[in-house]
Image 1 (cartoon, rainbow, N blue to C red):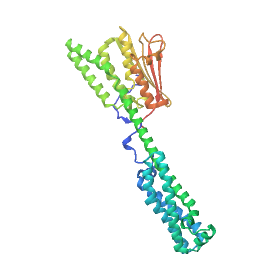
Image 2: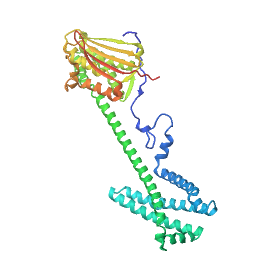
Image 3: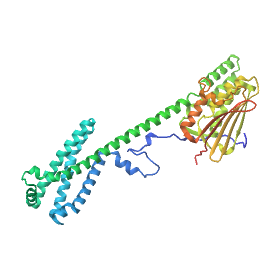
Image 4: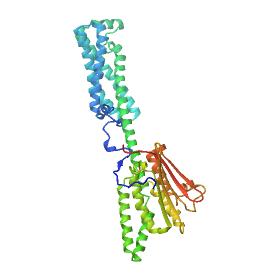
Length: 405
């Protein structure tokens, strides 16, 4: 290696895209800090939210009523205050006791039935509110106002006398219904969106795990065959050493979560275990070189991200050569980018290396590498295959340079 450094195990750092168990209740996705904590608390309980909005809304109506309607009718007096209180309580009780359960039932019906129920009930509740307000007004101020209205309308029919009040009450209940349905459908939309988002993330995690666990079958099969050969040749010492190396590598492989990242130092240590096993198989036919800058050792990378490139080089390059096989593993830092390369000197690299990615038989490991990078970094990473002179293939990765600190 360039700038030699003793490799030491380091702790893994969790870098998964989402930790669903840690999400707070509520329709808002948590952000750093507590900027949306109160919104999550407010929207988390629909019953609590209803009563907060209900009380706040009718208190606002009371303030508007006392500053406009009751003052216009009776000036600033105790009776006008009582009339505003009564009007607000009538509205509060009507929407709480009648409108809420009716609209709750309507929300669970089809569009046509919902529309019929809402329009019919709103008109009937508006008539009832107008009648109750008229009775309250008569009790507080006498019937002179209603008599004057009857004279101007030319009727004494009680229902006709409250008709002028209907548009205001229909508008009031219609506005209330708009807020009720709007908020409920918004919460339903956010809930469905959150479920869809979580489902997509779970699917991504499952896909990542599937890609990760497709990496080792050929290696394991070949290694077990090599160990079997050593046992048959009665080379117990070498077979035992190979089993120990295989055990250590598989332990690392199984313990490393595909949704986590690990330091490049740990990654190289695991690759050395893997390569030591392959060197036992190929002996002098395989030579491995590391060219890794010291300051890249603490960078975090997806676990075992380079292993399929090395496996591909051994299977399709080194295994095809009688001698002189070489694999070069490089790691360089370019500002905020970590550049990783795995190169071999095999004779069979195609003129268009990217054609390997469409080869279902030979390109599975390389496709998995590319897809893992895409899942974990999106457009912040690059994956390229390069044919080198005079012969060989390089797998080039560029990803963000990330460290714990």
